[in-house]
Image 1 (cartoon, rainbow, N blue to C red):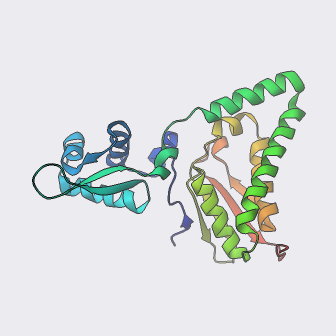
Image 2 (image 1 turned 60 degrees about the vertical axis):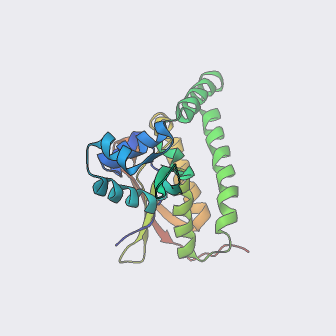
Image 3 (image 1 turned 180 degrees about the vertical axis):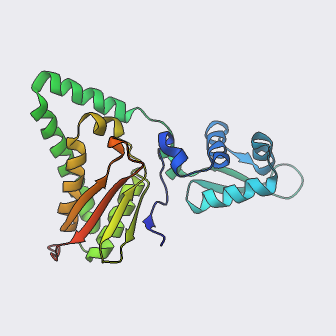
Length: 228
């Protein structure tokens, strides 16, 4: 059964988990070139224009690439392809490294408890932001919307419904894995955030920070409803 979510962002460090080599090459070429047509991409990849077009259609469906018709000189308009704005999360950024450096400095200067306070503050900020999009939804829709939120933030998230009525949230990419590997508190704060947002029991069964291929959360409703 296909899950809800996993429509947009995949960090470059984990791109192999979700995209084939030809698709990765297309994305990287468009990042460097700005835009390109079928013929150029076919030459870069060394495959036919038909094959390139199939990859581009798949990338457009995932909102990673967009196309426009361009008239240049005499002749029919040509389709030109460029990266969609949602593809920005695909490419390496230094944010996680900077966050890790900052937390290590805080730990050296103020101790481990200060790090925990920073992570709890971050959890509180996320709760406020997520809550605005979840507050008026029924439980199942809250879970789906949470997956969309995480997907938008680069976690390559999807959610599936199990046979017993539970939901399973998968995060195929962890943009903050460097932090999570050093500070396990970041992982526990994440599960606590989900529980508070959903009014649910959340069990973490897999963690990328511990070497698993995916972060996996089993979500079971507790029967509470959000206050309006």
